[in-house]
Length: 282
Image (cartoon, rainbow, N blue to C red; front, side, top):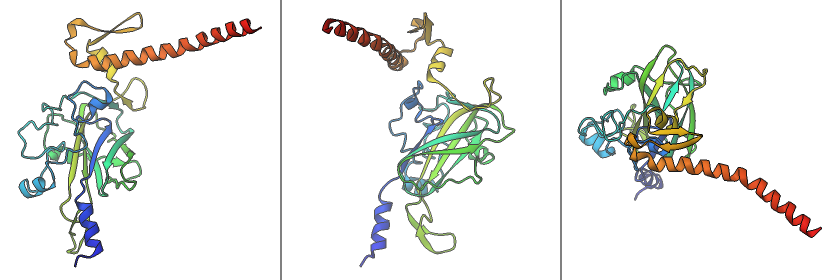
């Protein structure tokens, strides 16, 4: 007869963990922040091809950004792949402490690490292994213990590293499978585990606006590349930009601007109506 512990562990192992990097947004999730990138609607499920495929077929190997190792190169989330546009989503100063946001849509223990590669064209894991990022309070592994929530975790960048285009790598190793531990015993979280990955494109260098980390703005991205023009405080789409892919985002920007203006106009209008009503009553 199966023990209650075995049944609980089996149930836990049958549920997949999922997670994504929302800040700085990964290549899979940059579209959620408004960047003109190919949407990956399964951006919380980039899991090295699945646990069985990763460990039984690829001997535990995984693409640098979470794709299955045996996928044709460039893999979907690598530079030049379907989602690898290489758009810079954030800028930081050397040695700065910056905040990452990881959303575990389904959490199952384990830990994650962030690593950095200063060469965006280098698809070898060795490059990332040279620059593991340290947590603000020390160590490199973060153990999520709050369940399925958003985690804001501070990391410290290498003090002497400067790059116009760096790749920030996230690797989450779940801990919900039962396996053999390094000391020969068995337990939850030991042995082969499901893994998730993501890559974010960032830059590191001296900023003109101070030492505070800067999150790249999708609006600034469009403006700097001529997709959007500004005339008399109004945004407009340039006809010669060939930027049909951002029409939807531009409408959102305009909609927010109109909403803000309407709020400003509504207050005086209401006050005027109240004054007229009071004068009629008196």
